[in-house]
Image (cartoon, rainbow, N blue to C red):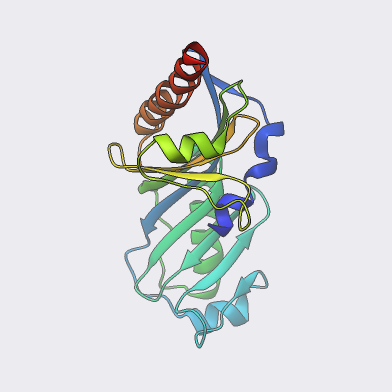
Amino acid sequence: MQVLYKQINAFKKGFIGVDRMKYTIVNMVAAASLDQNLDLYSLAVGIPNIEYEPEQFPGAILKIKEPKVSMLLFKNGKVICSGASSEEQIEQGIRKANKMIHEVQKDIKIKRNVEFEIVNFVATAALDVNLDLFDVAMNLDNVEYEPEQFPGAILRMDEPKLTFLLFKNGKMICAGAKKEAHLKQGLKLVEEMVVKRKKKKKTTE
C-alpha cells in the first residue's frame, strides 16, 4: 500500500492513450538474476549507494541515480528492480548494478544479455467523472471503502488479478498487472463497471 500512496502525485506526467481510457505507467517492477551468489557485506562496504541491514531485511538496497531506480540484491544473485517507467530503464538499471557489483566482487561476470521478467505494472488513469465512492462500495463486489482511514476506495479484481485505488475526482491507481495487456483490460473493465453504474443511477433518479 505504501508504494501505491506514492503514485498519487504521478498524474502530472504525460498520458498514453488506449481507446478512450488514458493511463500513465509510473512504476515497473522486474525480477532478474546474476546467476551467481553475492557477498552482500562486501558490496555494502565497497559501494556507497547500498543499504544493508540483514537483521531487518535479508536483501541489500542499491539506489541508482540514472535511471532513477532501486535494486534489491539477494545473496543467491536474484535482483529486483523497481521505480522504472520503461523496459529500457529496467535494462539500464540492471546493467549498471551488474557493473558496480563486478567492480567489488570480481567473480561476478558482466552479463552481455540482460534478461528480466516484469512482475508488476503500476499505472495512473482518469475516468473523467466524479465518483460517489459510497455508492461504488455498496453496489460493486470486492470494493472496500473506509474514508476515515484512507480517502480512496480499494477495488480488487480477480480476472485479471489487479488492485485499483479509486478517488472521488475519478482518478485511479492500478497495481498488480504482470503484462501491459492485463493493465489495459482491467482499466476497460473498471470504466465499464463504474461509469456505466453512474449513468444507470442517473437514469433511475
